[in-house]
Length: 69
Image (cartoon, rainbow, N blue to C red):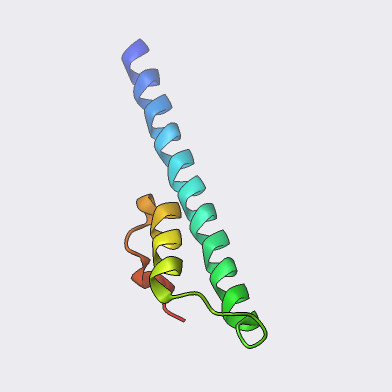
């Protein structure tokens, strides 16, 4: 019986981690659109800077290629 509840706890933790990862990638996505939207008045940084920022924040969400503008 105790083993079953332990598994349920692990599953909940995994779901929570996934949810946090999705939340984080959504924020990064908004950030990228913000940069693209203001790039006309703002010095646009080299693309690899943005990609490294994105991949740093979304290690759990896969490659940064999901953030194509």
